[in-house]
Image 1 (cartoon, rainbow, N blue to C red):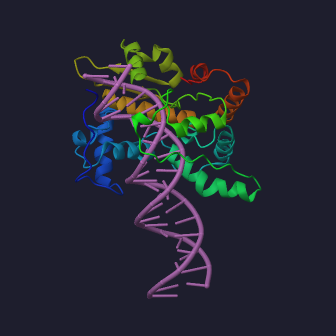
Image 2: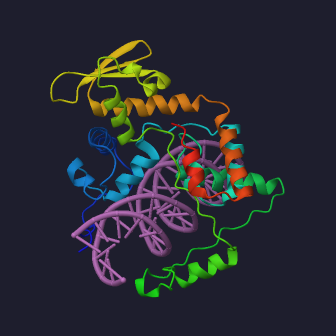
Image 3: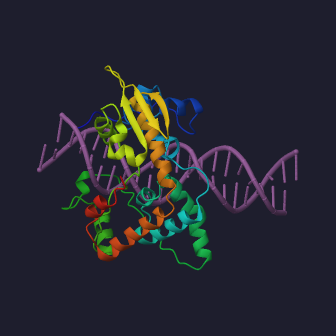
Length: 271
DNA sequence: AACCTGTGCAACCGCGTATTG
DNA sequence: GCAATACGCGGTTGCACAGGT
């Protein structure tokens, strides 16, 4: 019944990650892709729990993460999205290419909240989540805890927020690109044209092939291709100066007009 | 040089939700 | 439909480092 038991934490490493652990995790995910976090540590040869692996990958090792100082335009967008969305860091991060929810949360807590208070803004504290133990019998008829239900009543109608959309092609989409480009020259495909790359599978059963980008050709396998596209596509989007402003405007319009969030989600996929 | 204090950020914790059998 | 579990998220903690005394 249900899923298999969660990993035991006995004997697992905690605290800061070592270079070796980072390398093991990166290599494993580059080869097998994200997901199955519970079984990943064992398969990757790591003495960490899956949760820790996921966090390390999402917040630090992912190739599309933009490191370094948060720019003025990004800061402005964070402030405005926070005004619209509150402490929904994941949603905010999903609209800022290359930034993680943890990074934005930290930046808000250490820089922006103080800065805004200095400027005279009174910041609303986020409602505390109940620390009551998770007990399924404690749910009300809507499947919500009493605390959560009363919190929602206080806040009025609930707006259903979309899951943050990564500004990157996903595994299946890359597969589609590969399928579309399975003839001799993949740059004929619309995606290849727009992204400026092409993929020519080698003959045989393996995943090897020829990846073309910017006039250069690279021999690589499918997993390396996916990794490369992630990086390339992420960088190309980061170079779009007007994107952050458009993202904010979309959210702003959405909340004003109360358009269905899931329709909005469809409309904002940038691929 | 030694200590104290503040800051930044990676990592952890615990909860709610989604998924699975 | 239910129970068990994985996953994802936001809040919090703790450590390393910098700057001040």
